[in-house]
Length: 596
Image 1 (cartoon, helix red, strand yellow):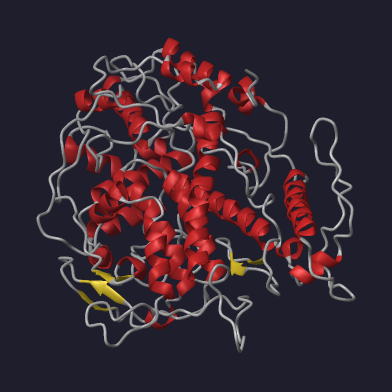
Image 2 (cartoon, rainbow, N blue to C red):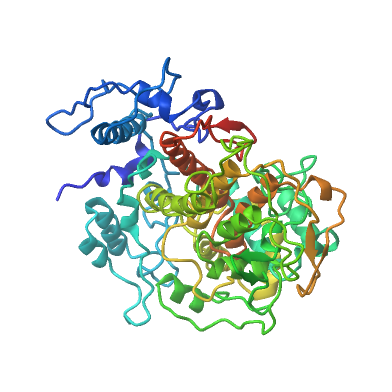
């Protein structure tokens, strides 16, 4: 069987092609600015020619009829045969547009080639020695399977767990090789290299992970006055290469564990969309959750860490709080992203956004009834509303549609380009250096940090205190599946709803998470749909970081990757509408406006 990529992915760090800036592959507002895009204008350019194909089935660039510029006169109605030709030409020209985009150049951080013992690479689930170093034969078998892309070769990769009833299995590496029939191919998207194992940036990120674990049970609303939160902010401010948001060059309790996307630094840490009652059709859902009991962390001893590293599970169940609560702490947020359906948060946000307020509903009060995006072609229409297009069925379908496309794109990055190790693996390397003298090149920033000293005091090791008994999933860290889906789904919601709409009556939970009270901060009137959607994406992405299973750049770069996936879907769908539609306009995570 002929496979598509081969072993070149394993040598990505040795390629001579220059690294592409993560924004350079993104369409600029000028390049993507839409012209009036209507069924009538498209039909006017079709003519009667049939698209030509080469003998090998490759679509020739000579296809005509792609322009949506206004026609001088309306075309006659289509016959059935013309409609079929129209559909064919639309699909082939859309494929050509994707085919003609710049070819992606994928590069890793070089750790996989740099370290013969693979300490800088993901290897969970494979057999390891007493120091957590992977069996080189097993790791070579994994690389061989990635080269051949044969399911049988992945099944032949040795496991670190001899009991098949307890074995944690590799998560779906072949999904990174799947194709899609809409949007750009999964391999056409680029993630920049992750921070390298020995870098100061990697050190800053693991210090943040340690502080996230230390602060797991502190309510987010208590950060401004909590001594540990202030210590975390001070420690992260001292890192030589920490990329979290700062004020005057300093991390503050308000910027702690956030990202500098539009609107995210305003208001409470948790998005309003997690706290609003959920109008789910005829059902009414209060958004309290089943959370884990505070103070219980996992994998803080070397034997338990090594068992999980070898893929042995399950290692015991979790202890749950018998009382349902609103999300109010890192523990709650970590457990929410432990159990969620992957697009759940954004589906719920869409229900809240599109359901009108209902004063007669004593439970939820209805939804928010946010206005649609200003580009909606039915704004001001005297006789029409959207439904199958630009209405609630379309909104909910395209929102969930992008999720699996985002997963295919990020799974390619995980298994075939980067294979970045997880925080639990890196913390294990720190433990082996500090307590066993192994000569690993750990940056001094983490070794001298207040976070490491605090973790050692609390647990007696340098290991990452995990929120989940099984630790991280059995797939590499970079990029992050949750974060990529978050970026894709949030981009769809920003394209469909008015980002500037100010959210009325913001709330915040009490410290016990049992009730909601009005949020009265000075920025309460600045909390918008767009900002809270960005925050929702961050909450889900960083909830995984707080659990200990992902890094900061896993979240930030993967949200941008998901944004690119969604843009490619919107670009393709824009060609299909019958309405007089001028394009989807919204604000990107980098703050730039774009029209697709």
